[in-house]
Image (cartoon, rainbow, N blue to C red):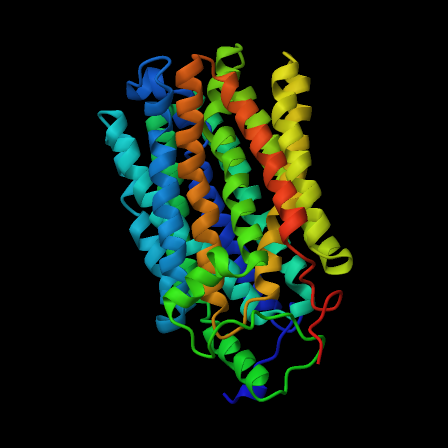
Amino acid sequence: MTDKDYHFGIRVNLNQFSHQLWQVLLVGLTLGMMRTVVPALAESEFGVPKGSFLLLMAFVVAFGFVKGTMNFVAGRLSERIGRKHVLMLGWLIALPIPPMIFYASSWSWIVFATVLLGVNQGLTWSMTQTAKLDITHPEQRGLTIGLNEFSGYFGVALAGIITAYLTEWIGAREGLMWFGFVTIVVAIITTQLWVKDTLPWAQAEAKHHATGKATGPRPRFPINISDKPTTWEVFTLISWRDKRMFAFSQAGLVEKFVDALIWVFYPVYLYEQGLSLANIGWVVGIYGFVWGGSQFITGKLSDHVGRLWPITIGMWVCGAGVGLTLLGDALWWWSISAAITGFGMALLYPNISAAVSDIAHPAWRGSAIGIYRFWRDLGYGIGALLLGLASNLTGFISTGFWVVSLAMFVSGLIVMIAAEETHPRLNQARE
């Protein structure tokens, strides 16, 4: 195929776009199986002593540092061997996870299984996002990432609920093993049969920009970077040399404090309040469903109104929802606060990725997305450490909620001050 044979847009690539949505749903299911049952039953099933907040958070710390690193590796690797090969590698690495959970004799087994989960998620989720951005039109990036994250976090929420019921039906270990095994095997089969490599689309787009044939508004690409940048050049640009990229990277890192909190402290806190495992699954599920479902709207919204204000407002709404959790003591209250948190996350989450994609050149977009996702998912590890330390120092799990709420407000303020609108139609480069 020649460069002119690669067409961009959701409609013209709907078949492949749909296969990628299916893949990210399976990625979400794989992550979601660890989100409700494992933290809630850490003490009774896996031997974590009551009140050991740092030990409890250990598996999220491991997940965050590993997934963050693998996001970075995945982006760069995919520009060398292609998106599909990286996706398949991620699924093959996930195969040992279900039997490890089933045979776990101590919490260290769960931590190691979560390390493998971090590798899996870093490789697979990065590729589903990058692949969709390769084949869609720049004007559709908000919608594209919104759909991607909607599908993924719908899977996360659904898996949390299903595994909670499976635990009550056939037991925690059996339920998690069979759910995980079926999900991963289906993913491997469907990747092999239906997924195409989208790297040629990105290469064709890069040539269009290089030859001046790209159509539409011109994005404000960073100017202090070479045509063929090294890994270190791209890393420093995304991390601190471009103040817009810095603002988005720190926001991504801090918002993962919320997800670390929801992952571990939410189930433990609600379990201590007397909620059943099924009801905990529904409260956490509401967060996931609202987050996932709203992204279909909030991602498309940013294609019209821009990225900056949805990101900033989303940081503050999400932080407010976390704080509200502690101000009530009923199922309906926790459900509403979870929904507010999820909606705030929906405003910010797809649109930070879209903003990074707006101003990342297609020649190194995979690397840019991988580096942003490195910092973002490092937030799991840093957030989990911070939450564990704060709660250990005070002896109260509620301390972690207030720390996260404050961090989200400050991070949103940094975005408002340091970033700018990145949508090329609303703030395009000058001739």
